[in-house]
Amino acid sequence: MQVDSLAAMLPQKRWFGAKERAIAGVSLIDDTVLDDGPPPLAAALVRIAFADGGSDVFNLLLITASDDELQDPFEKDVDRLKALGKHMAHGSTLRGRQGSFRFSGAGLDPMSEPGQGSVRSVSSEQSNSSVIFDEEIIMKVLRRVEPGPNPELELARLLTGEGFGNIPAQVGEMRYEPDEGASEADFYDLGIAQRFLPDAVDGWEETLAHVGRLLESSSVAGYEHLRTGVEDKASENLECIEQLGDVTAALHVMLARDGLDTDFSGEPIDSSDLKQWIERAHESLKRGRGGGDLEDLADRAGAIIDLLASVTTPGAKTRVHGDYHLGQTMLTERGWIILDFEGEPARSLQDRRSKDSPLRDVAGMMRSFSYAATAALFRRAEPGSRDWSNLEPIAEAWEDLARERFLRAYLRTAHEGEFLPDEESTETMLNVFEIDKALYELAYERSHRPAWTRIPLEGIRRAVARESAR
Image (cartoon, rainbow, N blue to C red; front, side):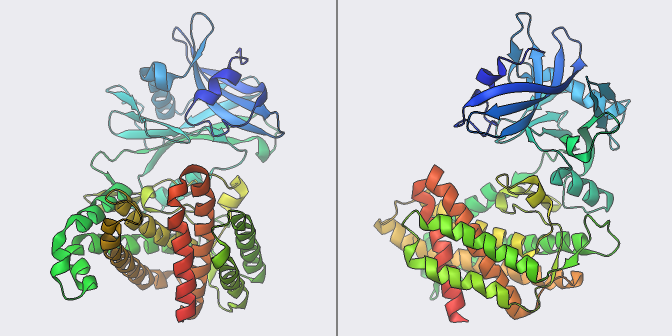
């Protein structure tokens, strides 16, 4: 396969997350033909070396056109991707030069290969690429891949096998395995197939719509107390958020239960874990100070982070979602569905696979409620305007109620898993994890949406206020 043209092609792709880095070279790790065509459709693992040092490995699906031009089937001929469905359904093993591309599909019928009815790509995908077969199966093709097990495949496989009903069931996967004798460092998970849920609605957009309708409703002002009015007008949405708290806790209870493989089983959190988390949060705080907008909060936030060292009963650490927010959920007729167990994309694979306090996920969802409240405000008013001043107390009241309902339901169910700290330690850990998450958000917003830095800054401010009120 000619790979020279990839240096020009890859930076044009939405999922290529290193657009700002100059490419120094492209080398082929291995490839195989998925479908003869013509023209042939190939799967290829390529290593991209960067001029500033370092490299990344990418998983590519490519059509070789008649003029040797390499084309992305997701853009040029998505129907060709039915080859993925065929290989998963039949459990194919396709040889490359020095290894094999292996497909499995324990949940698929080889007599009814996915893609025989319809094939369409998902245009909204950011860091990976997804294709939907027959409106029944969705396959995510992982793009930037790292050697070793991918946490999304690991957890989806586990949860499907355990019968956890609040994820889309995993039905197939794609993996690259080197020839015998190679180390685990040369294995790559390349794709995951799950049941597609056509009736599902995005949890973030659904929540945003509810908050938007609340802000548009003038009837809230008719209540003697604002909180009472918001609770009444948003009752359906708040009940739904309470159900999300139950589902989140059920996930954590499942991941903490006895009898799981050692890669998944829960372990006591010890002082070294707390020290590591403190150091990580302080590193984020140190970077955050550079922006100038954090100075009035930095010292107090740092003092709260240090409180983690005094926690005497921190509970257990387990595998967690790792990047938990409303955008990783969907609502269906049968309730909440949790998606995308890859973890925060900026973190290493080792970090994303490591065990953590389940409260880290809880803090992530709390931050998502803050984003939903303020994002709904942004859609209706300019910051600092009279409309903003009038609507902000309503949004804040909704956020407070959403936090309370979610946490109340979560704690009620999570006690079944025996991984929680005591009440005081829970409050401390949640505060620290929220600050840590808000610092991560702050770095992102400074680079991508400077007007939105007010959201993580306000999150840190409120965490400081909560600690002061204890």
